[in-house]
Image (cartoon, rainbow, N blue to C red; front, side, top):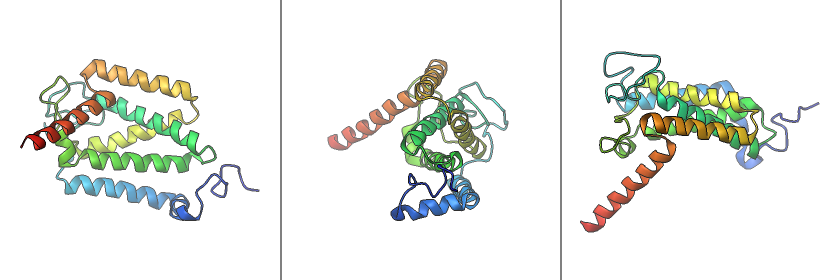
Length: 207
């Protein structure tokens, strides 16, 4: 007898998305492939293994450019955990019959995509915070980027059974905490990215 949340359940994608079911069936291989893509991209982009300041801390509360986004954990770790919580809520809502481990693979894929995009030269230049109060940003170290994905997965696993209203409350709390601590966060970053893009477009029009 099939479990109601097994891969044979009707809530899984149909033939058009058979590749996704194949990934679920080969979960270990898919996980390894995502981690390999993540690592190879960072190395090909020239990201350092550890802190460019020469140290590696479990927690870095400061905001100097030599340490920002270089260690195992910093204030941004809370934002990544919040991202994982949001993914758990969204996937549980959209695909209520999925097993948690299958949804977790999708969460891993989402985090991998973000970490790859975040460490492109274009996005790094957009996230340059030298003109505001947020910590300066020059890209992640390999250790920090992989740890960020770990924080996403931790938030995801802890929040899988969390009611939606509580998940939202935790996300808001984490966002406010980071915003007050270092004048940065998902919301502030979104505004800065938008302002940066509009600013570049405006300059292009003037030229």
